[in-house]
Image (cartoon, rainbow, N blue to C red):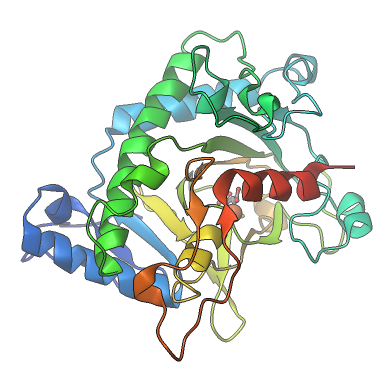
Length: 346
Ligand SMILES: O=C(O)CCC(=O)C(=O)O
Ligand SMILES: [Fe+2]
C-alpha cells in the first residue's frame, strides 16, 4: 500500500483514520507551534485508544532505511554457524548479538515458561545497543557493569555503519515523538528531554523464516505481548504473516505495512508514566497462510528505553483527587533488566 497524495490536501494530519491510523508528522516537524499542537493532540487521542499508529513525514531518509534493511537481510542469510558465533552471552542483561529461535523463556510475566519453551516464537533476532559502543555512555555508579557489554558485529561490509546510522535517525525521531507526547500531555515540550537524553534503547531485528514445516498448533511468529519501554518505532516489510494488535472488543486487527512509514506504539513505561491514560496495547505476529509460507519476513523495532536513572512515576497532569497514581515509581534501568531476566533467564 502507498499513501496517495499525502500532503496535497489541505495539510491533513490524519491521512487514514482507524484503530491504527496513519499520521503525517511533517507539519509538526516544520516547527509551527499551532501545527505542533494539532499533531500532538491527534497523537494523544490515538495513545488513549489503540496506542498504535503509523507515521509518515518522519524525516528519515529512505536510503538509510533501505541500507539497514539490506544489511539485516544479509545478516540473517548467513550460515547458522556464523550467526551462532555472535550469539548473545548469557550474562548480557540486554541480549546483544544473535538470538536463536527458542531463546525466549516467556514473553509475558503471566505466561507459562514450560509452554513457551514448547512453542517458541518462530523467529531469530539480532540486537544492538548504544551502551555497548566503545567509549559509550557511562552508567550510574552501582549499576550492573555488564550493561556495557560490547556489541557483537558480523563481518559484513557496511553492516555496522548501516546500523549505527539508522540508530542515530531513530534517536532523533524518538526525541521528536517524546516532545510531541509531552505537548499531548499538557507538559512543557522539553519535559521528557532530560529523562531520555542518555537512553538505553535496544534496536532489534526480527527475522521470521519461511515456514517450510507447518507451525505447531498455537505456535506463532511472535506470541502476544506488550512492549516494555516508552515507545517502539517499528520498521516492517510487507511480507505476509504480519503484525496484529488487539482491539477493545478482543479482536485482532491487522497492521498494514505502508511503504515509507513506521509503526509507533506505546510501551509499558508510558502507561505507568500516564497512569494508564495511554495504553500499552497487546500485539503479536501471526503465521502466513500455508500457500504463502515460503516467504520470509523482517521487522526492526527500536525499543526506546529512557535513561537508566530516569524515575518513571505518575506524570503530574495524569493524576487528580479522584485518580491517584496506580503504580509504584520504577527506575527505567532496573525495570528493563528485570523484564529481560524474566524473559530470558533460566
Ligand atoms: O514483527 C513485528 O511486526 C512486531 C515485532 C514485535 O512486536 C516486537 O519485536 O516486539
Ligand atoms: Fe512488540
